[in-house]
Length: 154
Image (tube, rainbow, N blue to C red; front, side, top):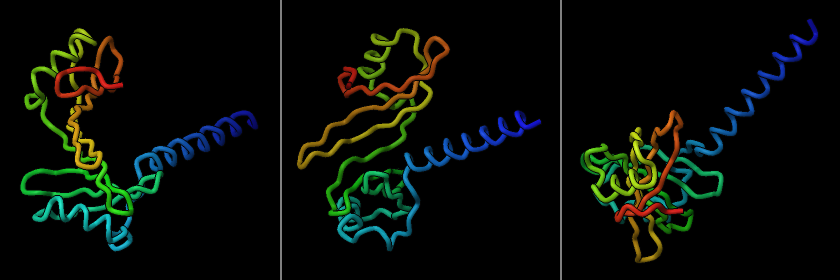
């Protein structure tokens, strides 16, 4: 009986830790008024007609603001000081460029795309587009990042 109770307690503790770690990795929802003004201003300057839906504070201290800009739903990464880091948008598989699909098949033949996100990485005035793909191949789920030319990004 003590062993059974001990296993259940251990399993419960494991689940609490796993769930907490998952939440921490994804960021913590915060009120918009708790996001530093320079961060909010940077997003509003880039997307003047957008509506901010919600904000998350990431474990590294940066923020991710979920916005709606027309019909687009985007997540915008930004530092507390207002430096834009990235813009993420889920895209349908049929909107993924042929070069990206070809690069995926070259690296992982027979892979099926499960989920796709277009990511614009911002470094000062330079912007680089990548595609983060969640794929199924050989009964495994993997994540792969490719650039617009279809080259795997490490």
